[in-house]
Image (spheres, rainbow, N blue to C red):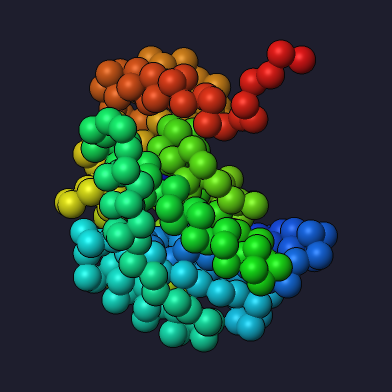
Length: 258
């Protein structure tokens, strides 16, 4: 991994914690709700929120489906216990079934997957609204630039503490924060269907993908330059740009006539 994606973890943790505290205070909110998945992004956000607000102002929800791997649930539970935060587990498949079986059409796998993400969003907001809390988002820069998230699902949040960090940087920050190695090293996966892995959908592993994204969007390199510097086929860069263009609508407010 090239050093250009290195971070000063202690400084970054302090900076993000300050942002979280300021965001919650400005909103006159009592704390935050975080959805813990057992993955690195939500683990880092949860740990940072505890640093910023204290464990008494962080409420985590585990929202597994029937196909969520057992180890993900166990990792999330163990992390919540180590952080000392309030936690609740709410299985979501029954809610997803109600929506999909009442639909007038036979939905696609992606459509059903997006329902899962949006059910989770609704449950997070139900708790946040009831408590007077904010929903802390867990998306990172890699996912944001690719549009690799569900609009009004995991993209439906009040603020995004780590969206400026690439996935590989989030892993480094997780190590600094003491996130268990089983989570830090776990392959990324939204787990929206059985066996779902991020590597099935993204153009390259994050070690390479993040370099491509950095060269394209931070250094404004041409596709050919990005491919050469990241040492990947230009087809990978073309796919990255295609995903970015197709998902532009996810990163902005809905268009209007004015």
